[in-house]
Every structure is written in C-alpha cells, then in structure tokens.
Image (cartoon, rainbow, N blue to C red; front, top):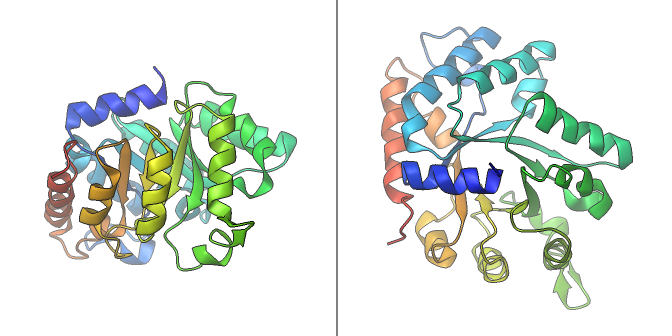
Length: 266
C-alpha cells in the first residue's frame, strides 16, 4: 500500500488528522520514569499505548535520539516496533544532500527503519530530493514555510515578484506526483498556508506549530477547507504533566485535539 493511501485509510479508521510528535527530552520525563535512555523508551511506549486509537501518525524527530548515539538509534528502532502497523510513521530528519549522500539518507529512512514518510529540506535543489522519491510507496514532506520565527529570513524573501517558498512550491508541483509529495507548512503562517493550500489540491500538508508555538487551529482548519492535512502536536501532549498523573493528562490533551481534528471541519 502507498503511504498516501495508508494515511487516508488510517485517518478514516480513526477519524482524525492528529499526529503526535515523539520528541522526548530527558529533563522533562515525568516522575516515576528513569531520566535516561531507558526512561525515554518507556515514555514513548506509554504515550503510544494510551494514544494510538486517537491518531493517524507518529512523527519521530531524529535530533532527540541521535544526541545519544547508538543508544538513541536503538530507541528509534524499538519505538517503531511498538507503533501499530496501520498507523503512519514519519521520520523527521529534514534530510537532503548531494548524490550518493542523499541516496544513503533515503535508504536509512526507508529500507533500514522502514518509515512511511520523511521530512526533506529543498535547499540543495531537486536532485537532492530525487533519491527519496525513488521509493514510489513513500510520502515525502518537503519544508516550504516553517513555523519558526526565522522562517522569514529566507523562505519569504521576494525574488522577481514571488516569495522563495512560492518558487519552490511551483517547481516541486511540476516535478513530483501528489502520491509521493507533501509539504510542511507551519500553523503560524496563516496567509502563506492559505496560498499554498489553494495550489496543492489533494496533496497532504504536515502542519507543525499548533499548541506550544501558538498556531490558531480553528483558523487553519477553516483555510484548509477539508483537504488532506496532518496536524502534528508534540510538547502540548507529551509534556502535559511532569507528575505521576502524566498518563491521564496525556490522554486528556490527546482527546482534546482528537475532538477538534475529525475529518469534517466545523
């Protein structure tokens, strides 16, 4: 099954657009769990076990694991074993490089770890992305207009009456098929989200920036107009409490987003 189809299927089955980012930080691991790599794995396991019925995907940001070297890689592998097979997995590594380097990155994500999707950085150009698109059953989310304040430093620069993100979007749409191509657009960019959404038909948009970063979920859902969307929430769910009640608080925050992210927008 194509990752594009798998994502549509699980969204219908679980009736949600919610993706949870498994982005652990040792200093924020709740009471009762070890503040080490073993504690991270147990934390991930608890999160997955109490939320899998309410999500369509889990996103693993490699930075939070690679900092621990081989132990971190092992946590990724074991976490992927815990995630139910019908739920989409996203490797958030923002990869892309020249030639064989990009091929190696793609092979790592899609052959070794067997992720369904990956996030990619388009700065090096189309040829740096192509190795990921050589896997026809995978879905690649390319950074277009991100949620961080510094996004305007480059992504919104104007070149010949067009913003850089608009130029990148146009070239990607001309090169890749929607079953393999998605976009990362931050919820803090409402104007840009609307412009991108108008041009992307049924392409999936992966939306960070809701929760801790302050994106307006209601406004984004209105602008999205019931098109294909994944809303990622990380800190506002997984760090809902640092106390021993953390599991219940995670469930409460997950249900809150679940109830606001059914497939029919209000």
